[in-house]
Image (cartoon, rainbow, N blue to C red; front, side, top):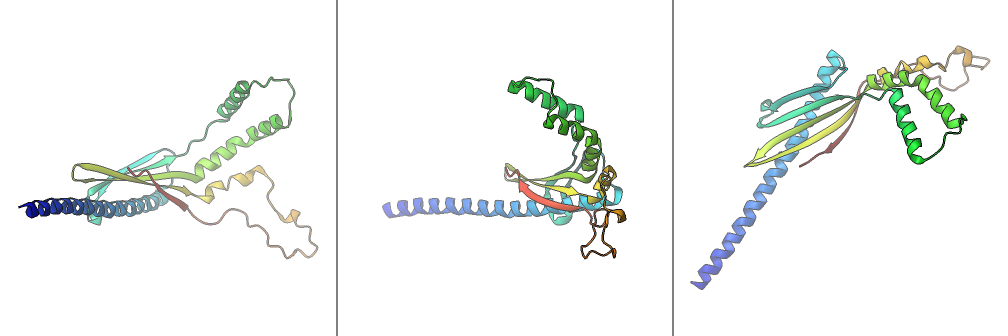
Length: 209
């Protein structure tokens, strides 16, 4: 009877460890699927927005992955419009930082003040170019395993180089008048106006709970 009792305790411990191992394998399988499905959904949304044009505000998408044979897994995706601060807000933050540092205003315009002033003149152009060319996109996949809920988030930045084409309007473009070679061919490739290419992506994975 003592031997049977020892065997029973050993089998109970072994069964418990096997159940834990199976749960861990199931979670790893679901997590891998969630990451790939979230990335897939971001591709789908990017393609849709390429056809309709980038929105000028935040856009949210909700659904589930029944078509991918994961009906119990849901997603919530967000395309975030990156709104940059106005120049008055930047200037106000600079003044507050200087006041907090205890630096007294001597009334003189130094190099830093002159640089900030010049940058303030072109900030609306830079602000518009960046807001037109960059979007932050994230997609969160959620699922249940028993009574426990899990989620993981895939985040990325989409860039559209064509949105930066308004920057050359500031001046300083390379033109024929800038070519001082006598035969018109100095052997150095000329820069091509504008930026070629389409949207690009820099993915990252995070927010695993």
